[in-house]
Image (tube, rainbow, N blue to C red; front, top):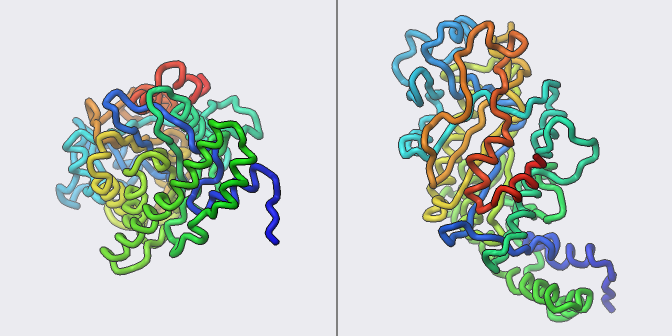
Length: 407
């Protein structure tokens, strides 16, 4: 005889997690934006500190080329293969896949951005950005930035459609932790496990949540299990048919982002997403127009371009935020690489477009404008960029944004 353990959290997890729903509380009801369409938000974290002085750089700045004799981009003699983003600013040639998005004003850069954390520690800086509480956060804080955003989206009153969040990867990232359960989605999984919730399990869940409103959510969760599982399986099968191989998150970044977009364009339970890419800690042999960093930037730009295309019409309601915990030293080191720095460049993408390709405060990089004489300074606190350019597009009003960002 099968006995249920009458622990609400554990029972819900065992009953709903097969379809990626770790608890009923994830089935919040969220606000639509002004156009009546469900907004989507994807955070992409580049772990290891991406050298954004190679992503976007002041091409005509002699100090830049003097500081980077081996790893500088667009050095004389390499040909005119640079895409000018704004007067004096150019994009790494390996990122040509996003050129159409830039030309359509659907991509923007925010140089001189960051959290202000000056530790140059990967772990502390990542925690600072993922918590989104500024520099005075308390150790042990459990409400991640993206989770707080999801909570505010779920708390809206403008529609009655469920809204949820997902993340990929092997662990529950700090940015996703909090009261709104964000579900792990395994894009490498071949089968969904127990995809059906039998009537006995459903009735047990409904007895635990006897009030009509919550029981209705339980019933909705059960009914949507097959839909969620089918969506995930179809997305994976479509990618495998197109590419002739399994979709593996670590093996092919473009396929990973295509599969992620196949889920997120459905909206609803897949409205908010998080994914991460490691391997950006380029202390040795970083490369320049070609090499280690160029290969990673090419993979990233190809992946995000594929994501935008796969989103289809939903791209118009989608916001993508690409961030790294800090930048790297402006000068190259003795190993033809770069070391831990300070300021970085935030990258934003959206089908809704941006007024201009460079956002926020800026300056001309020179010896006397570097932070501590070595790094890109932080002129644009990243939460202020989210507050101004991203979260209002998610349908959040000023008070909700302030709660999200704890400002």
